[in-house]
Image (cartoon, rainbow, N blue to C red; front, side, top):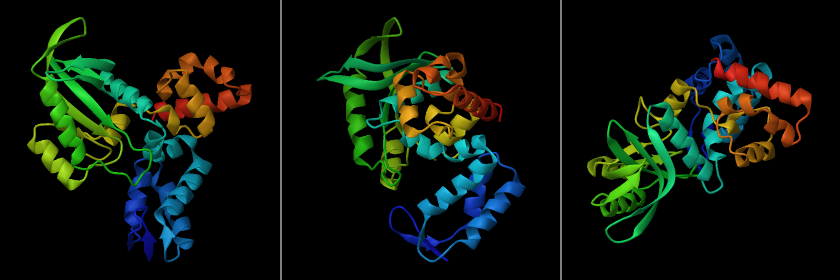
Length: 275
């Protein structure tokens, strides 16, 4: 059975790949097997992977909103747009949880020009700049031109001391982050040039997906009990993480949710954060 990827390429349907992606959501194996069987029964040659994903998401949501929220995680990151400002704040929070000090949207004077840096982080006396390459669509990739450009900015910045975190520091490391993936050339050039690369699935064991699950830092956009418009309104209020919302639940009333819907949202958050 051939399926069509979002890139337009035809590939064989991989039942086990679908199964593993749903197991990562925390759903029990029996539920996952049931969903895979239901989807297998409705397959036809040329079905899009997007349609398969939507079917799996809907079937998971029927059983558990929190499992559907985790299954929806990659799409949730793509909703931290449109320009990626919320994604930059999310990445800052992800590094904070790992023990870094962070500052967002810093202007640093280089040898030649001034640079706006997405995030500056510090840990163990090492100060690093983070540049975020955000993609709002699933098919977009970060190609080799991006690490080349970021490296030139890093080289302009690192000879100068900069006042961050209350005193002057030299930026000695550079991290490039994307919510989708890097091309092979981008990975080769970035690692060869000494950049640290972080994407949805790179590196193998410390990628964005693993860090989110390990640290329990789910973006507000993964919730299934809020509409896309409501999620945007919550983001504008400065709430990026699911775990921030229970202590600021008045925001849900502010954006027009009924008491029952607020209760449903908070229940989904409890289920998601205890997994």
